[in-house]
Image 1 (cartoon, one colour):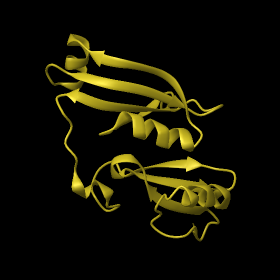
Image 2 (image 1 turned 90 degrees about the vertical axis):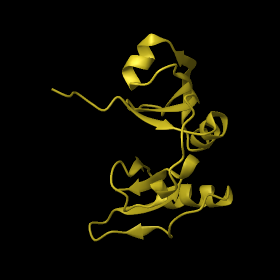
Image 3 (image 1 turned 60 degrees about the vertical axis):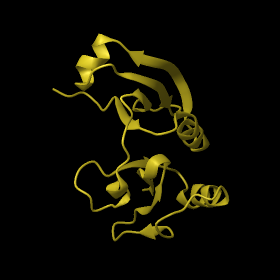
Length: 142
């Protein structure tokens, strides 16, 4: 039986800038290390794996974000990943107390949003934006 979601793993092209991006959103670095050796080769099903790794957390939250920059083998970007209609994993949503406040703060930092804040028929305020390597992120106020 699954108990909880432990972490979300995101492969990035630049670990330093991706880490800085998520820290701007309020995350803090929990740990950093380099992953390599037979154990990681077996886990990911590739050979000669070496990846820089950062685990990020939010105060009071259990689910973490793990960022990996693969040094070997090099990761490949997918130009279609930035489209919300692509099949597969699509986005990570962050629950916030004041979506307008965070939206305004991120706009000041030149973060590009898909649209202004929208309110769905059920009262949820939300907006999508791109994070590092065009991953889709959502701010949601319930």
